[in-house]
Every structure is written in C-alpha cells, then in structure tokens.
Length: 343
Image (cartoon, rainbow, N blue to C red; front, top):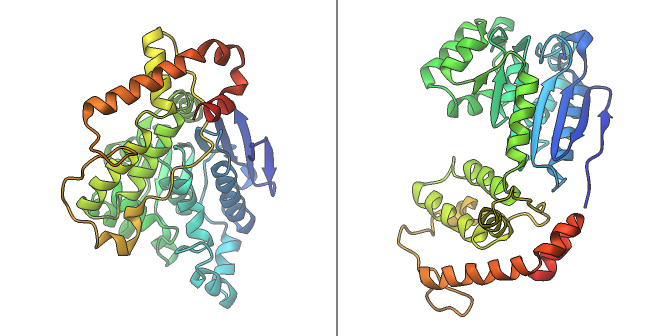
C-alpha cells in the first residue's frame, strides 16, 4: 500500500503530509506559478500520488508566493502554436482529455475531497485548475478572469464543462466573452468561490482537517456518488445512490460511528484499504438496461431483507466490534488488520 511522503515534483509542485491531509502547493513563485510543461506534468503527478494513497482523507491545493496561478506561461503559449503543440492538444493522452485538460480534471478524479485555496490572481488556466476541486476558498481581493479570448483563443482546460455545474449558463458566457477581471467577492456571489477568508490556505487546511475526521469510506463514497450521478439519468442516479448506500450499511465507518456515539467519545476510523467497486450505472450499455422500479433488498440467502432483519444484523456486528474495543484502543495502529480479521 503506497503511503504518501513529503516531496517535490520537478521543482514545480510540493506535497506535504499533515496527518491525513495532503497539502499540495504550486511552487514557481517568481513566475506567479505560471503554467508551463513541467507544471502541467507535476500537477497531474501530484493528483495521481494522493489518489493512490488510501490513508489520505482530504487535499488542499494552493499556490506559493503572491498568487495562486497567473495562467499559462507566454513561452508555453507560443509553443502551443506550433504543429507539435497542436498535435499535443489533439491527443487524448488521459482518457477523454489531453494533458492540459487533465491538470484540472485530475482533482475531480481524486477520490477524496479537494479544497482549493486561492489568493492573488487566478487567470485563465489558473482559474480552470481549481474548478476541478470540490470546494474553493478565496481571499475577497483575489482577482479572477477567464481571459483567453483576450489572446485570441478559448478556455481549453475543461473550464467550459466544469463551470456549467457551478454557474448559470448566461454568467458563464458573459465571463468568457468579456474576459473581464472580477474579485473573490463577486466570485462568491456567482458561485465560483465556496467561501471567503482572509487567509484562504489556513481556512482550507482547517476545513480539510474537519473532513478528515469523518468516516473515510463514507466521504469517498459521497464524492464518487456526486461525481458519477452528474451524467446519468435520474433512474440510474437513484439506483446508484441505493447501491452505494448498501455497500456502506453495517460497514466499518457506520459501526464505529454508532459505537462512538453510544460510548460518548470521538470516533476513530480506520483508513479505507479496499476502494468501492466501480459503479455499474456509469456504463453506457447498462444505463439502457436499468428500469425504474422498486428493488427488493435481499440478504445473503436470497430472502427478503426486512428493516427488522437489517437492524438485527447491524446490532450483531456492533456487539462483535465492542468485544474487541479494549484491544483496538490499546493497539491503535492495528485497527486495519483487526477489521480484516473480524470480517
């Protein structure tokens, strides 16, 4: 199981571990963290690093120096005008996305919540990257702009699809057509920014630590559910909601939450080792096969699982968990192996 350690990626992005939180920072302050080839690659590599570690429970993404990100480096922009640059944009190097789009989409694909802390400026690509985050915290005076049309191009780092779930269509079009600069205060009013803070990085870390105290399996499942129900039918979304919930019922997170509540203590969750299986409702072929009808909930034996039987099973697992509580408290770091043995 890979465990994330503090390190730098190509002198562009740093990763520091603060408990269960990964603190990721763009580190090209002399250029206001402008985007170039190594920066794009480092951002993708950083996202992949935290995604691969099941002990990370939240991520904070921020920029070192006086700005989050000033957008693409002008030298890199000139490189994109070449035939080689155009081929790189046409290439689908990361599934449906190219390298530049993946620098933003990668944060949506990280299986835990990502919080972007924004200060100084976030222009062009520097605004599109944090759109992939789950939550954005900004200083009131941070300057934002989708200024691509000012340079004779369009937003091309997945901003057009990510912003559609964040702001109204007419607002999106006005911001792109005018390339105007707006502040963090306005960004909060129109929904691009989740909340304002005088110190966005500190506020983001505080929020990340709060999320990290919740059940990790439930938080990951919630992000998976929110991501995957955006592009499916209501019928498929409702079925997916039920399927994910069934996977969590009477699981380690719920047992620990109920035990902690009964014992009047703070929950101490084990980290998720086995990821939830891929949700079947995202398969295009399956979407046409899903019919919107009530499903019978059955147990292992195939008999109907009534609420009474489900409650009995949950209470039985609670008793087993409580029997191991003294040992579990004494050997905190053996929580995961104990959970596996129990199952």
